[in-house]
Length: 409
Image 1 (cartoon, rainbow, N blue to C red):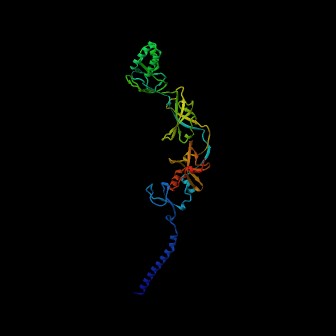
Image 2: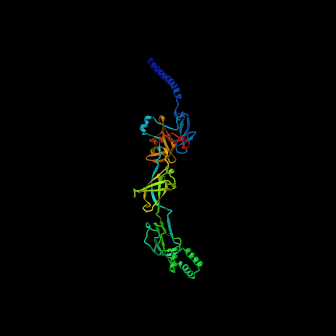
Image 3: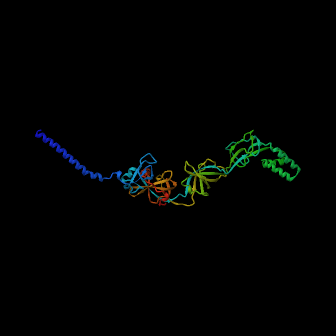
């Protein structure tokens, strides 16, 4: 081997040896840095949770029992304020967040609502057949007609009255007052009206025809008789609703229903008679709430002496309150209604936003009364609060129940 070739091989081998030594030194120099760093997986986890159900905490990782997903860890160094969402001030404007101040004002002394006139269901006359018979004539009436008291509906032939009336007339000629009184009582028990008995005594003849009339004035709701029909005892012939008074069914929002009481004064105005103000009182607050409109039905009884109040008319109603009350108000758009409770995003110092449960009251002109959960002067998010609520759910923030909150209106 020549000296030149030997020298080249020696130079290459030295270079490789030097590179190996340098790599070994560099690896050992950087190793402490890698060992001294802490990755996210090595941080201390306080607990694990499901972002879709953050209320439940788990002491070890694994699959969520609620959703088909892995549990998310909550680390100790990220739990400085686990009950609030923190957002940098520079990002707030980009998110479109708007704040509103909780103010205190006097609650309106009256409540505006809408009502509908209905029939007074206590003023109803149901006309039934008291004896078997045959319908000989039906008078020209139809459902919906307004009738006076005593208006004729049908003429009925009652053959079963013949024997009782003949016995009564025979005892009348005998002059025995005791027997005559007993015979008269028997006529009443057969279902014979007083006017038919009076005609028998005046004429001295058998009266087998009866004219069925309406006992009260009102609207004919049902008419179930036709000429030639055979009647049995208890058959319903007609139904009449009186109009001396009507009911006003007022739909009151459930948030304001607690302030409505029996005996409360009501003012009503009809579009049909805009210049007339009707006055009445609350007669009942019905126990059932409408599942569609979330309103409570309040019944008001209104007098109707001239009969111009007709069921079905829409009425603007004002329920007057006896006392005024000072309450807290926030914009209605700031409320987050989950179905089980009502939340607001409370703005705090340092760009923190905390979900707070509140008790909502009456809504009026875009403002909602807050009965519990907030204090005057606090600020709530009125726009963009749903983004913050979603972030709070992902962070596993648990909203403090209202009964444990120390804030009072």
